[in-house]
Length: 171
Image 1 (cartoon, rainbow, N blue to C red):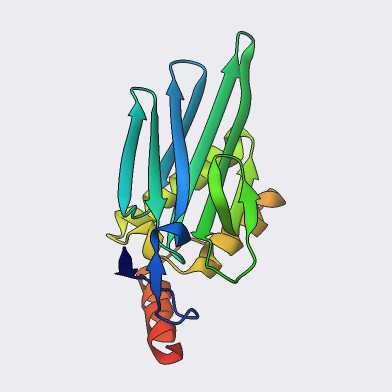
Image 2 (image 1 turned 30 degrees about the horizontal axis):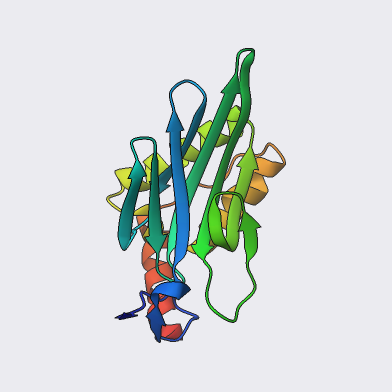
C-alpha cells in the first residue's frame, strides 16, 4: 500500500510503504502504567486488546509520547518525548515502545518537567495551533531550557507565522 507522506520542510515528498511507518504501542494498566500520545496525527490505529493499542505515524510527522509508571511506593517514571517519526535512510533515536524510533526534538523526565511541557503544549493549543504543526525548533528550545531549569519562551502566533513562512520558502 502506497501513500503520500506528510513531509516537513526539509524532507522531500516521497511515496512510502506501510513498513516506513513509525509505530507507537500504547499501554494502560490502571494505577500502574500509562503510555499515551499527547498530540500527533496517526494514520492508523490497531486495537490489540482492552489495554493496548498501536498507532502508526507517517515519516516526518511530529508527535508527543508520554510515559508514566508507578509502583506500590509511588511514581517510578514520568517521561515525555516529542519526536519526528523516523524517515527511511535518515538517523533516528530509539525510544522504548516506539518502532523504529524518531528524531528527538524533546526528551525530559521527572514529573515537574513533564507537567511543564504539558502546560506548554496546552498553551500552543490555546492559540488554535496544533502542536504537531509548531516549529520543531520550538520543541528543541523547550527541551534545552527545561533541562537546565530555565523558563522557555512562549510560542506565539507571530513565531508560528514566521515558521510557516520559512517552511514555504525552504520547500
